[in-house]
Image (cartoon, rainbow, N blue to C red; front, top):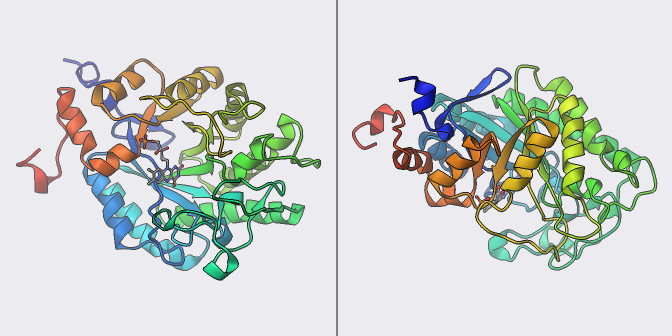
Length: 360
Ligand SMILES: Cc1cc2nc3c(=O)[nH]c(=O)nc-3n(C[C@H](O)[C@H](O)[C@H](O)COP(=O)(O)O)c2cc1C
């Protein structure tokens, strides 16, 4: 029988540029809040490495700060200096050796930076608690537990942030990653520029759709110049703000078309996080329609994420052409071997690592 017919859609490979994912299952980026000075350690190595052993097609390292002040918390990962490269290189190398694509998400947290670790409450930190000044398109606080009013960025700040993204992309390449994702979701800096709710600027970075998307598009163009042609580039967006007057799905489709023209290969479609009072209806696969609409509306590969937990659910998403990849976050924390288990459920068998051959 033709192997592509007998293999469930979830386990069919996907090629993006020169990189092939062995299946459509990805480990969604997940902050571990466990780095010291942004440097990865054994926790990250085991956390990410074990999920590559578990059979994921791609493992994406958590939101990684392009600058110290771009971290959400003092425990967040960073890649703003040379000494942060080596521990990440060890992780990327192992993930690839285990047959998965090694991805990394690079980020600036904007007005949501300078927060406590979640298990210490997650609220903004004062200077006395080790917090720092936050920056954003406009001096508008997020609110709730994150009341700090950010400093509205100057053009010099904007240039610096763009340059930091480019420098970080180069370090990600030096570390051996073969998939790069720009974090433009969840109310962090790029998202703050995109949404009219958080961007009240009157210069060329605010106002019209064209102006609000300028920073992300300019940065993507600059990153694409240093990120090799043969390697895929992705952008995670919040497809909608879940708030009246905010960013809408039509905006996401229009943005995806522009990003595609800049050399973006995959849109990772999440949602929300921009404002504390968003009204979100969370049901299984609740964000899948966003991935589907962006995929068909902009004719670009997409990743679906959010409450995807079941093998059949994940396989359906791919088979029905709603997304090219499914990313799992919390379910992967429950089960590092989710791909192996999902394969069994779908009547498929993954090739186990030799060491585990007697058990899978
Ligand atoms: C512990 C944890 C950390 C997360 N960190 C990130 C992150 O670094 N970057 C990001 O884009 N999303 C992050 N997320 C969101 C997840 O990637 C994912 O989009 C979300 O949890 C929904 O997927 P799920 O229902 O499979 O958990 C995080 C989620 C969790 C649970």
